[in-house]
Length: 454
Ligand SMILES: *Cc1c(COP(=O)(O)O)cnc(C)c1O
Image (cartoon, rainbow, N blue to C red; front, side):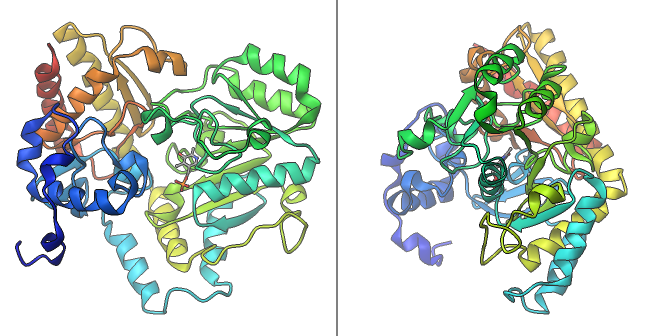
């Protein structure tokens, strides 16, 4: 290891230890500790995305490789992964079918700046499942997808206001980074500095799952609203399923007032099923945003909807969108290979069963140990909370015992299970989380919860 060139630059890691929650971890991961010390001088907070900095640990662990359900750390540990790249990897790490598709594509070069056959195939595949999409545009991230969908909604309606919901995360751009979830919630900065008041004022933020509040605001401002943008299942403030009738009411009100409904399915699209959450809840949105799973682990985003609306996108129409990496050939083939595999059904069956078994076990462990545990689950996504009460709103999440969650997280990590690294993220299972992996996980989670009980 002393031949590693990076390590020659390393500094004393001890002064970077900002938490004593788990000293044992700091001792057991010397390589990660050194790498983070170095990274802290180079990157703000030592990371390139806030969700990767684990606030309850002295430093994050560094990954060397990954396969199936496992991450292999720079310190030589093998961890069962429930983060799965924050959602995209529904087939698991290093899936051979995706690897083959990507390797074949690499042999043909990888960036042309002109259209490819692969982008048509990927689009047709997506549209064969998500019927509300008649035309689509590929971009590189979910952030770009929602940014362009909002711009398009404003271009189409000629209106300025948008409505979003507290704790819903739509990426990191100015239109939507107001009371957002995910890393922003974890770090207590739900509304970013640097967003002009004039911009923030155009975004009305309402509580998720509050049908009355939505109705009230639409009655007052509905004629000025360009779009309601929402996560059909909130998966960036822990996991909060929609209340019965909530999405339906958003659909009804947008139609009544001539606004558009944007379903942000960046995380739910092709994760909860081939037709996404809109298929699950039988909703036809005006615009859909996609990302994550449709790129098979490579950078991707997409937005699409009816022809009438999408024809406003440049060069056909006046609403501008462009990107060097739009419809990147590698992301296209990786996404297509992923969806082809998902169509067989087996991947969903395994991932959903893993998520179901772990969720039920957590409740069971809680009741045996006399600890209140609530678990929310939708398909292959779940999150658990230390509380006796149901978790249906962002306030319910905030009222649960976050400290206990983080303790359990650290204890599980010591024992080889990597859970979602924040109470405000969600756990994802994959087609590689087989019965044996789940058995081992449940055993470790019980130990971790016992060790965290004080
Ligand atoms: C992850 C996510 C985004 C942002 O996607 P990026 O590719 O990280 O920019 C947007 N919306 C939702 C619902 C997400 O989960």
